[in-house]
Length: 69
Image (cartoon, rainbow, N blue to C red; front, side, top):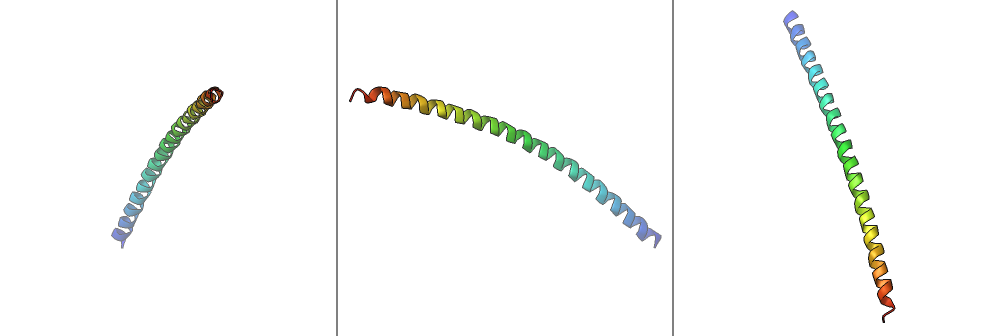
């Protein structure tokens, strides 16, 4: 009976250590995801600004050329 209890305690300790390791890994992954999301958000903003600038340039080109018709 004592052997079964010791075995149970060892399994409990292993489960706790595994849970702690998984939690630490999960936190690390969450940090990485947040960093990558911030980079993607920054890049998206750059692309939107570039697109807006191109739309303005193309719009000005067509407005300038519309008088030649």
